[in-house]
Every structure is written in C-alpha cells, then in structure tokens.
Image 1 (cartoon, rainbow, N blue to C red):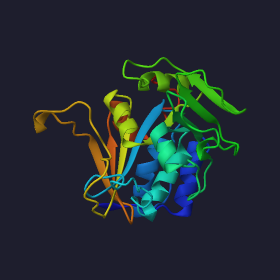
Image 2 (image 1 turned 120 degrees about the horizontal axis):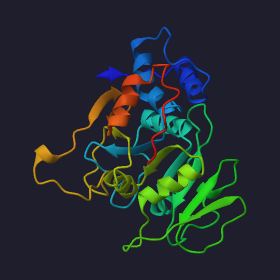
Image 3 (image 1 turned 30 degrees about the vertical axis):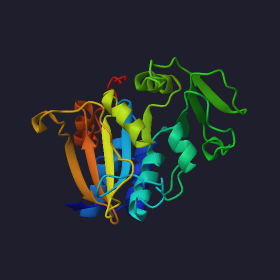
Image 4 (image 1 turned 135 degrees about the vertical axis):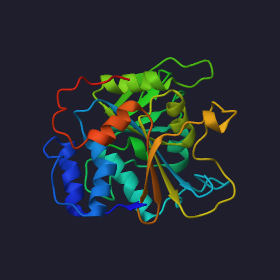
Length: 279
C-alpha cells in the first residue's frame, strides 16, 4: 500500500496546477510525495474537462454516524485534512439539506492552504434556515437549489428546478445548472444518500472513500446503492488506488473512462486543447 506524504512543497505544486501556473510533468519527489501527486493532481487539472467527485468518510463497518446521529469524529485527523484538500481543489462543494441541518457544516477550507469553494445546498422544499453556517457570508459563493419560490438573503444565489415524482431533484439537472454557473469541478460531499444518488445517475467520475479504524455497529451507511445486484459478477469494480493517509485509509476510485484517462495522463502537457466533456 502506498503511503501519501502531502508535504508543503508538494501541496503548493498541486495548488499551482489548479491555478494553471504549475508544471505537472517534472519535479524531484519522494515516493510519498509522488503518491500525493497521484491522488490530488488529477483533480487539480482544469484543462481536462468537468469533473465530479464523490467523497465519503466512514468507519470500518461502513457507518457515517451513530444511531443517535453523532458523526463528528468518524474521520481521523488525516481523513479530515484529505476532505479539506478536496474542497480546496474544486469549484463547488455540494451537500443535501439533511446534512446541512444535522451537521451544521461550514464547508470551508481550514486544514490546508487553499481557497473556499462555492457552497451548494440541495434544499427542494426550502427548509434550510437563512442563518445556517453554510449560508454565512464569507466571500465564497452560496447557492441553494430548490423547487419552491423561497427568498434567500442578499448574495445567496437560487437555482429553481422542477422536482421529480418523489419530491427530490434530478442530479443531472443540478450539475448542468452548476456548469452554467461556471462551476466545472464539483465535490459531492454528503450525505451518503446524496452521494449515492449522484453515483446512481452515472455522474461521478471519481469516488473517494476514507475509512477510519473504528467500529460503530449501527447507524446510517456511507453508501446506499439504489440498484441492487443479484450476483457479485455484476457489481461495479472500479479501478482503485489504496493509500495510507495516516489515520485513515483512502480508496481512490476512478469510475469512468474519462476518470481513468485523467489519472493516467494528468502529468502530460499536450492536452490543454482537449474539448471539455459535458455532463
């Protein structure tokens, strides 16, 4: 298993790549730094088309919270740093309203250098209070996706979409709306149901599952497939890089051909003129 070493110099190179200023093809790196580059640099490239990443932090037995809903310490310190690095590399982070109501997340970048992404809350019925931490005015874009004609505080952008028959919103329409907003790199952070819906819609190019060494025994699962398979031969088996992040083990999964190409070719410099793939 490869061990990632996200040193300050390798993280600065990754941020430079994200800004279109850094060279992705050279450098004298340790094995651990090269592993870190292999994890993050493919996600930092902005000239390889839109990207949607799903992220789940869970226990050994696949739980993201206790039965009572306690989810604060599921991920270890390195798992949390990994999450904040993902936030720093994307244009927008997406969560469902239940996660916003229960966890009160700020969705900011605090555990590594980097800019805060736009914060997107999927709130079909307009339940999220205007004073929720995710809607706090800190200079980052704030977007609420809803079906109702509910006003929001000044500066909060609203995307109104029609609901499906079950009252939810179509993930493909959400991503299309974010593309129209110029948000091409999206992190679907939570909760597990929201990540699963984007996966089932075939919209996630990458899936990061960070597993922490604890056993909970009950509570919500991190990933809930709607489509069940009758045989293990029919189960998806994505190309996966398993990495030791320190306190957590990362399963870095490439779900699509485009994702595999990105992971294999992120260091090449002759792909800037590729036509962007749309969702």
